[in-house]
Length: 137
Length: 338
Ligand SMILES: Nc1nc2c(ncn2[C@@H]2O[C@H](COP(=O)(O)OP(=O)(O)OP(=O)(O)O)[C@@H](O)[C@H]2O)c(=O)[nH]1
Ligand SMILES: [Mg+2]
Image 1 (cartoon, rainbow over the protein chains, first blue to last red):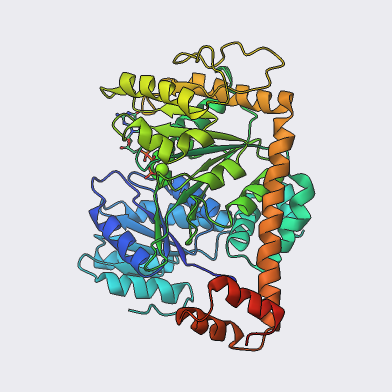
Image 2: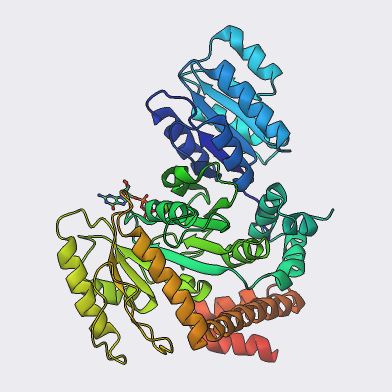
């Protein structure tokens, strides 16, 4: 019997303080049947790319509140490409100014979620992005 | 290059992919694992088990850091170390939050360290069904030491004792009394017993109690003098034919007692090899792995050959108490159910 699970890395890059939002998202992904690798606060893009590789995740979810997304995300995308992890889908949540959203998507980010996005939307987007089965709710 | 060749050449991306295939029990992955099997058998498999929150991940982080540090006692910059950390899957959704990496951030960026988180996926013995296969692949990939952190259900996690060469059981002060420890069977599987969080008041009592309990729990062995805290390298004699489980104190957050623990792990490896127990354990492990496979494979093949509903029919009879479970199975096997 084979069983493929969606594996997602939830990371909190940058120096800003809390990871409440990231934890809520992690829990809702678990409740949707995913395996969520949770790495905690203050992750560098290098740490995130390395963990994504070792854990062979389908997707990486970044929670960024610090405003440093235009530094962190390009660096992460570059590392993923260099390491041959082109198949890993990247999603960003947090406080991202509207004008930055298209720029992030140009870099290859699948979706950007602002504050107040429902966890169901996030979960459904992840499932669609990795080409998995729709969540049964 | 094939995936197997890439894994043998040290390609980490290939290794990570292979581990997923093994975890998902995909045929290609299991075939690749078979191809890698001749390259296994060299790694020292160290199990780390104990109740939730006793500090297993924190201690693994410090152990690996120390082992990787040239110049530290027991440290060597050439040692390749893998960590397999198992966390529980939710029985309701099948999902999991794997959080052991949070405590292992000091290991990030070290090209000789590879950490893999696994969900237990319904297995109850503290490991996932695929953990043994994942460990074999890491062994073939050239890791010298493989640390396996179990779920930490607090119950006898016998799977780890069967999988690892050296089982380190972690407790902490105030984790329940010694009688509970015996009931849970942790003393029987412990090759090394650690009281972590020794900075917490009451640690001395826990240490004392565990040492006393250990003498009771292993009555077949006369223990003249138990090693004292931080004294694991106590003389055992070169031809020591029995191992006296040391009880050691650590403060994982501060790294206290970590050097001594590494020494004890190394002592245990030497003991296993010198006494021939390494081979005995290996034989036992492989035997139980093969027996389990035989059971699963036979059952699957047999059920495949049965006409649909045969098993269900027998199940109904057991439900109505007209057959016992044993009678039902025998009747299916004998092909005569009435
Ligand atoms: N005071 C003290 N706290 C510690 C020590 N070691 C670990 N901790 C703390 O104990 C908590 C649990 O540590 P972990 O390493 O996550 O424990 P664990 O056994 O891996 O936990 P699970 O994987 O969830 O079963 C953390 O808050 C650690 O900081 C110690 O030696 N002393
Ligand atoms: Mg842990």
